[in-house]
Image (cartoon, rainbow, N blue to C red; front, side, top):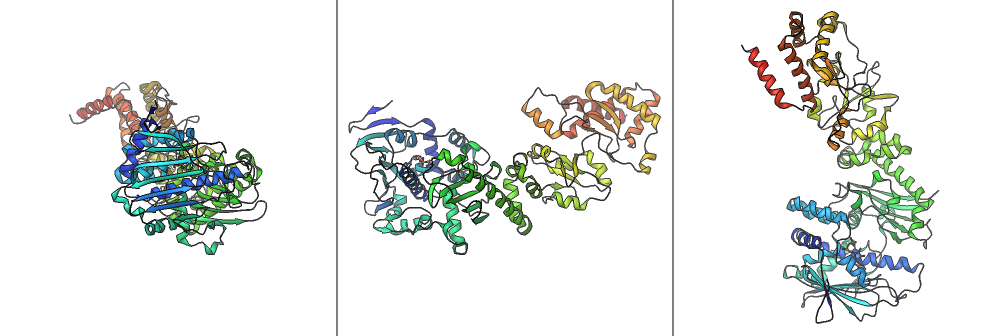
Length: 621
Ligand code: ADP
């Protein structure tokens, strides 16, 4: 696969998907060209962090006494740019592995997704994903990477590519540890070869880099970790820039939380909540930007998943603790009781912070729930210790609440009348569909509030909820729900004998399509509805199961009929004439399928329509 070039350099092919990614980057990031600076500085800073971490336990590294810093050189006349670090460097294999190919399978999925996104959102998506090194191809036609790994016997390497399918690697005589990346700027981007401009851009976030950055001879950052400053010295602007720097987000965060704790465990933390969910938030595998761990200002690990439970992984920021021994391996860090303590405190603080928002910052809280609610709710299934706090933060739509507004369970319970013993809910695909469900009629008539749950996650978290404030949560689609009838409703209905006789014709006609046919107490305006038997699943859950498994038939439903409805009364009259009347039979089938249609479960629309035509023909004779 490698071809020998005349210079002694070997030529290699980029993987196919690399080409796609490069193409996308060059053509969609043009609105944010300065990203390349941030990415290169961030890579240099990572490399310096890595070598500093290694030197904690290994004194045998190359250039052990070298200063840890980043140097940027520009030349306005030659239109060139270079950035050099004294970090960990790369071996030839590492160069090929890391710079020449797409590492994670998540990246590939991401590239697929990008192809279908529209042009403006692509820039945002790519930025949030962290394109890294390849962003340099926005501003240049050819890049040179010269690097030497931190081992004493390492060999220097030069990597060169125009980002168009191939790259070359050759061995070079490089004396010092670290990496230098250099290139000539395309004409459109020549301003990045002017010291003044470059300084201005970098200054925005250079103070968040742990190492001195030089542009030419001048050191341009002060290197004080923002989270080490007292709270009142952290300016809004600095916080926003810091957030953008660590999250790759172009927008300011929705809010942040600063912690400076001493006690069972001591740590400082800056935790941000983004305004919108990054594209990779719901695909765990590619989620990389969460909390960075520092030990006494020394960087230990990025994306430290042990610091937060999964359902809070929308939060991003840094945690700095002096309670971890510096020279421990990452594996030990991961299993350390200190980490567990920090995680518990952080979890409780973040929940407290959200609770505060729910009371004092309703707009922010609503935004948060809209974007992160589905993820946050899964905490009910995993974080039993904090279940009560999570429950209080849940918000639902409801029949008593205006469209697009939400209610908490606490507010719902406060509105309950004394004789209401249960919290009612209905699940479905959308509020609009839910509002048309005939099972709501009884509740509307009796002014009973019903929660309208249309988030697909709801049906997975409801089983963990069971009850709130000692009041069971009950689906109004269950057949055994306890509904009281008032006297006047009774008098309008068919008498017992007529009802019994009609029910048996229904049962006979529908056969094993239904589990049973019973008289309904819940219907007011509709003639019939399908409900779930005692042991049946929530209908929404059943629909999901059917989507996942075509074979899954689901449990049979119970058909409830409204014996006060004029249609049912008319059918009773036909039944008294002859129980085998063909019109009676057609109407029964039509009523059953109509109820299935309302639920979104009608399997035979053609028969349904032809039977309807038949009935209308008879009716208009
Ligand atoms: P990311 O930084 O998101 O991993 P990049 O494409 O920017 O993606 O970089 C890929 C990898 O190349 C890095 O993870 C790192 O291992 C290596 N790398 C990039 N720049 C440097 C550098 N200056 N020094 C050492 N390694 C580097």
